[in-house]
Length: 257
Ligand code: ADP
Ligand code: MG
Image (cartoon, rainbow, N blue to C red; front, side):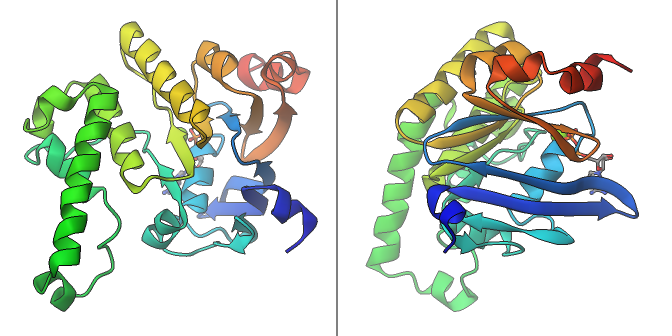
């Protein structure tokens, strides 16, 4: 293990990703220390979501390595990466219209993913106990995000903001040490923005490491200790939020065209 990987929870090392020749990420590196709350910002199409997809195994980078807790996880399948302790939310907070909120929560459990048919059929007492624990955890998390009263409602009944809250609660079902949040407050009402900001702050305060993609600059400034900026797939700046905001390259990327 090199010194740099020992110090950091997550190391993204020189990642590149193209789509049919179009450069989505080019030689991007950054590190996240345990306990940090890092912002990942950049104009639309700058590669932020692609970076999350590479880290969580949904996409395979053409070049570069991703190291988590000193172990290379590049190109492991998503459920394996989730088991390592990395959780995420998706930019479009989609729900299954007919599954209940509680069923969404239980489906977000990773423990049984990858199991064979046989082990699913012959569940013993241990599996049943673990299911009861999952339901208990789900109830607690739904309470934390303010959705306890909707546990038996179908997904179709949730407002957009409630879907964002559910997505956050679902991501916490696996108790991830590192949480990657893709625009968790985008498109929700101001009241809900405040609630989500408080929830994220609380997750950070209680020891979780968070990387946050967010367009709402006030939220980024308020929450993040450090910000990484992408533009056209390249990292153009990195540092404390206020320094980054006045960085000429960042100003140019956001307002100069
Ligand atoms: P951001 O999240 O910063 O808005 P994305 O990572 O979604 O940016 O996209 C980066 C670039 O890659 C964009 O040009 C986008 O159109 C392209 N892209 C993203 N995903 C795909 C895909 N699955 N297939 C083809 N092009 C994609
Ligand atoms: Mg995106």
